[in-house]
Image (cartoon, rainbow, N blue to C red):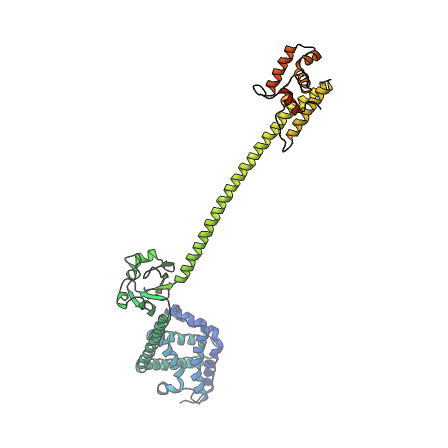
Length: 444
C-alpha cells in the first residue's frame, strides 16, 4: 500500500465531497441513463439514487479511516465481505425483481460515468482529478466482478430458494382462496375463455354433481341462453345482475358475471356468482301483490267516485231543471192567475164579487207556497156575469130571482149555469152547482 501524500489527501477530499454535489450528480446520471436507453425503464426515486451514491462512497471513507486509502484491485476482490456487501445485496434485489444482468451492469456503468462527470466539475488540480477518477473506476470495476460472481455462484441457489418460498406462498394463497370460496354461501363458478367450468366452490357442489359441473359449458350448467361465452355475455353482460331459477323453480338466484381479466391482464377467465334471493323475491312478490290489490281497490274507489260524481252532476242538473221549471210555473201562475185576479179586484165595484176574486187570489198565493194543495183556480175562468150568477147561486137564490135581480131572462141564467158547470168541470156529473160553490168559498 502507498502512503498518503498531500496530493493524495486532496483527491480523497474530492471523493468524499461528491455527496455535496447531489443535484448535479442526479442531473448527470439522468442524462447518462437516457443516452444509454435505460431511463425509461427505471422506477428509482431520488432518495434511491442518493442512497446508491452514499453506499458507493461509504467503503472509500471506511478504508481511508482504516489506513487503507489506496487498496488495489486484488485486495478488493478478496475482501468483498468487508466492504461490498451492501452493493451486492442491492444488485441481488434488483436481479430478483427481474432486472437482467446486462441492464443492471449497464445502469451501474452510467452511475460510474456520472460520478466522473461530477469530479470533472469540482475544483481541484489535474492530478487530484486523475487520482479521484482512478479510485472511482477501481471500486467500480471491483464491484462489477463481485456482482457477476454473486450472480453465477450464489444467485441460482438463492433463486431456487426464493422460488420454493414463492411456491409455498402461492400454495398458501391458493388454499386461502379456496377456503374463502368454500366458506361463501354464494354459488361461485370459474369458467375459462371458452365458457367451460374449471372450478366450483362447495356451495355449487352441494346443489349439483361435480361430474355435471367441471368441464361443462356454463350455459348448460345454468340452463341459460347462449352457445358460447360470447353469446352468453350478450344476454348477461359483465357486471349486470339478473334473476333466474336454474335448478329449482322455487329457488331464485341473482346472477352476476365478472371478468377476472379486469384484475389480471394475463387471464381470460370469468367468475359467475349466484346469490340465493328466494326470501327477498317472495317478500317482493308479496309486496307487489299487496300493492296490486291496493291499486285495484283504489281504482275501484276512483270508478265509484267518478260514478257518484256523474250521479251528483245529474242530480244537480235535474235540480236546476226542476228549479227552472218551478220558477216557470210560479211565474206563469202569477202572471196568469194572481195578477188577473188582483186586476179584477181592482176594477170590480161589487164588494161581493171583489171578495170572491180576493179569495181566489189568496188561494193561488197559498198554492205557490211549499206544501200547499187544492184544486185549480177554475173560478178565474168565469166571466164577470158568470161570477155574479155564481154568487147568487151560492147564496141560494133560484134562477127566476137571479134573472130579476140581474135584469136578464131566465134562459140567460140557465145558459150561465151551464157555462159555469162546464168551466168548473161539473159537466156530466151529479154534483150540484150550489153545493160545489159552497166549498169554493166564493163569498164570506
